[in-house]
Amino acid sequence: MELVPLSIGDLDLPFLDEEEHPSSGIHHHEHSRRWSRIADEADGFVVVTPEYNYGMPATLKNALDYLGPEWAWKPVGFVSYGHTSAGTRAVQHAKQVVSTLRLVPLGATVALRIAEMTGGDGLEPAPHHADAAQGLLAELVRLAHALAPMREREHPASVQGPLPGSYARRLSPHDAPEVTVLQRCCWTEEALANETLAIPALHESPADIRAWLAEWHTMGLWRDGRLLGVVRTRRDGSDLHIGRLAVAPDLRGLGIGRWLLREAESAHEGCTRIVLSTGAASHRNLSFYRRQGYARVAGHREDGDVNLTKPVRA
Image (tube, rainbow, N blue to C red; front, side):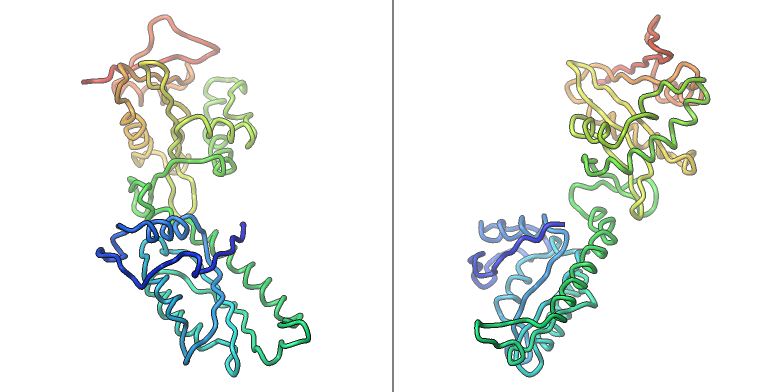
């Protein structure tokens, strides 16, 4: 995880001037849109704040109030500084606000009492402050990973899945480890059915999978941080190619494969037919695809695979 420093003053945010409620995610002004993009791309936050009259600064409250869905299910840690209370009362004030915005405050904090850090060359934090900062960052990273499924499920780019609590999103090269595990679970059965280990999905490394994830449009179905199923699509002229349709073995029979196939087929605009392949001895797969309207390409068979096609209805 990369730390990117940002000063609220550099955002040039006036006091909240948007007409729409922040929860709508609609921002009319460029300063709001810029702040929204920055917050939306972050996986978590560390807020460094002073204390003013038992509370956080107005500029921090204003920056928080500008946004809504961009904050949801992201961890936030606090580094405070001040005199008597070392800024801790500002943190308590801020925690009430961030919790309302569905940010998740950390238990770990760093509190700096200015009088105890003043040295000849300015402020000199003590060694225990560095230890506290390391603990805060470690907790931030752990919580950011733990909350990732919550963030992804509510992201505008995600699609509600067929199972309660499931959602689908486009996979990226970062998802290669999960895809590797799912492929090897699913294609072991295909290897047994076709009596061959010469199946690319069984031998691809995470690096191989990262490469094709960057080229294919691949959708993954998730629930509680687990990859349940995957399918990829790519256009070739007037054909839409569908491949690597896989469902976790313990979840078969729940309609996941059919749902993923329909989602993949929905990308057919501008195509005249859909093409996919499976093992010649994968009778369960062949039966499934026939029920979905696919037919074998007459006379085509390559390395133990058969091609199937389905016309795109206008």
